[in-house]
Length: 422
Image (cartoon, rainbow, N blue to C red):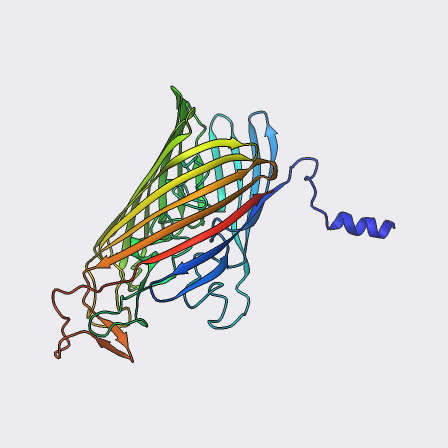
C-alpha cells in the first residue's frame, strides 16, 4: 500500500511547493463543420485552430518581497484536427495523408516563459510567449462570441478557392489560391491578426492606470512591437479598445534572399450598452511589405445582442462582415504553378458575411455555438488555369489574355461547436 501511495504521489499534479504555486487551467473545444466550395461539399469534425485549440496551461507565482513576485507559464496545445489546416484534400490537417484515415493529431508547445512582476513598475517576461501585438485587435471583444467569430480565417484558411467553371482552361477541378492567403498577411495570422503566432521574445507590460496600459516586446531576427489598451465603463456603456504596431525584419519572404521589412498596424474596439445588451465590435488592420511592394487593408465589424433570457446563461446573437483589399506582392497568385508572371494579379478583394448564436452555460463553464459564413473572392489576374502541366488561358505567344479576370466560386460553411473550461 505504501508503494502504491508513493507511486500516486509521484504522478499527481501538486498545488506547488511551499514557495511557488501551481495552477492548471485550459479548455477543450471541438466543432462539426459542413462546407461547400461551389463544386464539392462535405462534413468535418475539427478543432478550433492553433492558438484557440484545446489546451492546458500551467501557471505559478511566488512572492519575492511585498509588491514583487516571480512566476512562469507553460501552455501546451492538444491539436485533434487543426481548423487552420483542413482543406478539400486534408480532412484532419497536414499530418494526415489525403484519402486515408491516418491520424492528424499532435501536441505542440505554445508558450513557455518566466516573468518578474512589480505592482508599481510592471511585468517583464522572457521566453516563448505572445508578443505585445499578438491578438491585440481581437481581445477587446467582450460579447462572448470571440471564439466562434473573429477576423482570423480559422476554419477555412487552407481551403482552395475553385474557379467557377467558365472560360478558357477552367473547370470544376481547377483551383486558385487558398482562402486564408487572400488577406495579405505576412509573418503569421490569416487575413486578420498578422504576426499572430507566439515567438521567443522579451516582453514588458506596464501596470494599469485608469484603465490604460502599454506593452512592448522584441524578438530575435528581428521583430519589435508596441501596444496600448484601455477598458472602462461610463454612463451605462462598457468600452474597450486596443491598438498595436509591429515590424518584422528578415529575409524576403518570397525569395528568401533579398531583405524585407513587414509593417503591420491593427486596432480593435468594443462598446456595449449594459442595460439592453446591445453591442458593437470592429477591427482594422493594415499590412505593408517593403521587400516587394505591396499592402493590404482588412476591415471587420460585428454587432448583436447579449441577454440573459433563462437560467443557463447569456445568449449572444450576432452578425458579422469582413473585407480585405490587397495589392502588389500581397496578392496571392491565381495560378501558383505558372511561371514568368503569366498570371500574377495586382489587386484582389475578399468579402465575408455571417450570422450566429452563442449560448453560455454558466454551471458547466461552457459555451455552445451555431453559425453560418459566406465568402467571396475576386482579383484582376488573367483567366488562367494549370491543367495537365500546362498553363492555359493565354494567347498563342504565351502572353496573358488582356482585360479578363479569373472568376471564382463562393465558399460557405455552417458549424456547430462548444468549448468547456477547466
